[in-house]
Amino acid sequence: MTTARPATPPPTRTAGRPARFGLRSALVLAGVSAVGIVAFFWPFLAQPDSAILGHSADAPWVFAVVLPLLLALALAELSEGGLDSRGIALLGVLAAVAAILRPFGAGTVGFEPIWVVIILGGRALGPGFGFLLGNVSLFASAMLTGGVGPWLPFQMIAAGWVGFGAGLLPTIRQRWEPLLVAAYGAVVAVMYGFLLNLWFWPWLAPANSAIAFVPGDAVADNIQRWFLFNFATSLGYDLPRGVVVALLLAITARPVLGALRRATRKASFDQPIAFLEPSTAPAPRQR
Image (cartoon, rainbow, N blue to C red; front, side, top):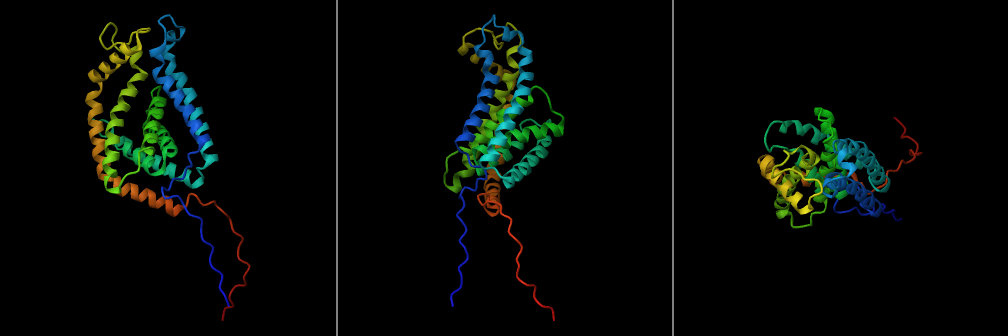
């Protein structure tokens, strides 16, 4: 008499990523990022007599209307392509943790633990997941703290890029991984501050100064003024943020990444959800 062998479950991805980052997802996220790039950098290419500059103060509000629609499209596309209900649940949990952590950094120069969640989430779960995590985290934290304004879409898209880049970091030995994510965190924490200044700098910097935006001037000259503006106004905040984020990542990367990867493996994100019929075997007779 032979016994039936249990069916061998299909193998799961070793990376444990719930969202498959395929071609369609890449195209959608590329479209969202293209809109973000235009929103950040369009003043550099505008001519002095352009009608667009006459409505420069309206640009953040237009972006505020357009970006959430594009992000909804990206979320729908990823959900259809590979982010199932379990992946969406994990996305919601991590975004909630990030939203809760953000107020702890309010008023403290450089202390922003929200970036630890976004960077480690993107590192453990992939670039597509990291992009959505950055966007949803900043949106949820703004709803929680009342920080809703024309700057919010710029924060969302920049945070999405931070999570996306974390998912693209190369695979290295586990012992060196905390140093890799810490170095990445230090760089992007400073770059995030530089990018966020672009939403208001072209029309709020003091006129006729070395750090003022000059419509129609050479792109290289305006970029130089932009860097001077960052050094003069926000570098004292951006550098401490980079240092603190790097230290937090160096301390927490190994245990948090291990926990996230174990959670995704146990949740079997690659396994389809199936509802089985109840067993028809007779119930055991009670004595």
